[in-house]
Length: 327
Image (cartoon, rainbow, N blue to C red; front, side, top):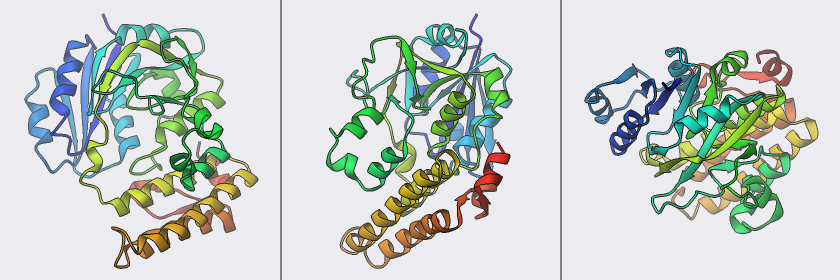
C-alpha cells in the first residue's frame, strides 16, 4: 500500500482540476488533499464532486508555501507528493517512494512532460541558482541568449533526463517530500508570498542540511502550465517575482553576490520602466510597477535587508541576521 499523500494547491483551477484529481485517484496514493486558496470560480464545487478527495478551503489566499504546509500537516503518511493542479500523474508514484527511501534522500521528483509527451527541459529540473544565474535572469540575458553557459547550467540543458540521478532543484509541480525531513526544516518558508522561489529555497535548505534530491525518470506527469496566472495582472507578477528573487538572494548569497543581484534588478527595472512606457505597461503602469521593484532592490542593497512577505505580505523588513535566525 502506498505511503504517499498527494497535496494539490488550487486557486481558480476549475479549468484543469478534473484531469488532475482523476489521475490522483488512479495513482494508488493513500490520500488526496486539495488546499484551495480562496478560488472565486467553480473550483470548490468541482473538487467536492470527487469522492475520496479531502478539501481544505481557505477563505483568503494564503500563498503557495503556506497552503503546502497546511496540506502536509493535515496528513500523516511518510511521504507527501506536491502536484500542481495543471499536472496529471502518468505513473511512477511507487518509483518516487523508492527513490525517496534511499539513504540520505529527502525528496524525489519525476519528469514533467508537455501535452506532446516530451520532457519539459529547462523547467522540470534545474540547478540551484547562483548569483550569476539571477543576474542573467533579471537582465533578460537568458531569454535573449538561451544557449549561454550560465543558462545551460542553470536549466540543466546538459542533463539526460532518462537517467536516475541526484539533482539539485526539481520543480515543485511534481515533487515527493519525505515527512521527517520536511519537519526538520519546518516546511516551506511562507514568507515567499504569494508564490515563486519557495521550492527553490526548500531544495537549497535540504542541500545545506546534507540531504540529497533524487530524480526518478520513470515517474512522469503531464503538465499544462501557467493556468493560475491568467487572472493575475502582469504588474502583480512582476512585483511578486522580483520580491521573491530578492528574498532568496538575501537569504542564501554572501554580500558580494547579493549586491550583484540587487544591482542587476535595479538596472533591469530602470530599463523596463523606460521601455514599459511604450508597451502594455504604459500610461504610468511601468513607472508604478518598476518603481516598486526599485524600492525593493534599494532596500536590499543599501541596508542589507531582505523583503519578507510575512503574514500575507505585511511589508515588514528583516535584516539578513534576523532572516537566518528564523530558519
